[in-house]
Length: 217
Image 1 (cartoon, rainbow, N blue to C red):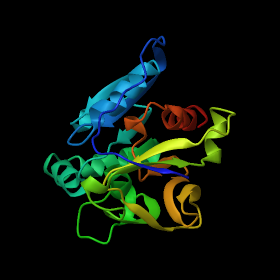
Image 2 (cartoon, rainbow, N blue to C red; image 1 turned 180 degrees about the horizontal axis):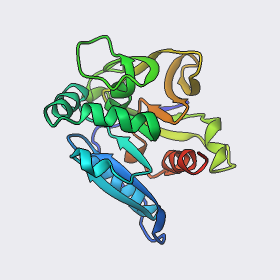
Image 3 (cartoon, helix red, strand yellow; image 1 turned 90 degrees about the horizontal axis):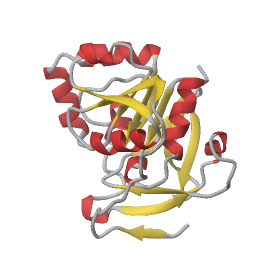
Image 4 (cartoon, rainbow, N blue to C red; image 1 turned 180 degrees about the vertical axis):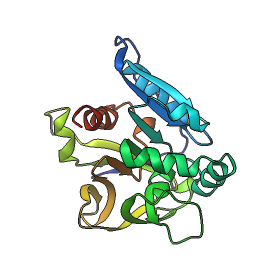
C-alpha cells in the first residue's frame, strides 16, 4: 500500500448526469465541515439531498451524513441549535454515516469532553494520524464494497487530521484497516463510520455502499 502525501487539497469530483432517484432523500449535516463535497458526490449519483441545519429538516429523510470538519465545533453548534437529541433520535431509526469528525460524533467515547451522539459501540482517538500538514492518501482493501462493485480495486482513502477507531464492540463489523491493525472503517447495524474522506476522492463506492445500506433495510 503506497502512501501519497497531499501538499494541497485540490480535488476533482465525479460529473453529474445520472437521473434523479426520487425514492431516496439524504440529508447532510451542514453546521460546519465539508458538507458541500458530500452533496456534490450524491448529486452525481442522482440522489435528492438537503443540507440539514434545523431539526425539521430531518423529516422524511432516508439517511443522514455527518461530514468531516471539527468534531468539537460541530457538536457545540448542534447543542446550541438544539439539534443533538433530534439527531440521536433520528439515528436510532435511520441510516447515518459519519466521516472523520462525523465518525467521532457517532462514537461513544473520543477521549475528550465533548458532545457526542454516542450511538455506535466504538471509541475514537482524535487526530491520531497527525496534523493537517501530514494529510495523506492511501489505497485500502475494502471487501465490503463488492456489494456495489465486484472489482478488487483498492479504495483511495484521504486522511486529514483523521481519527483512529481504537476499540469496537461485539456487534461492530470492521470494514478496513491500515497496517493490518489500525481500524479506519466500521459498520454497526444502520450506522457507518470512516476515519477518512471518501467525498474528497473521485471514487463513489462508499457513497453507493451507504445507499445500499438504506435500500436493503
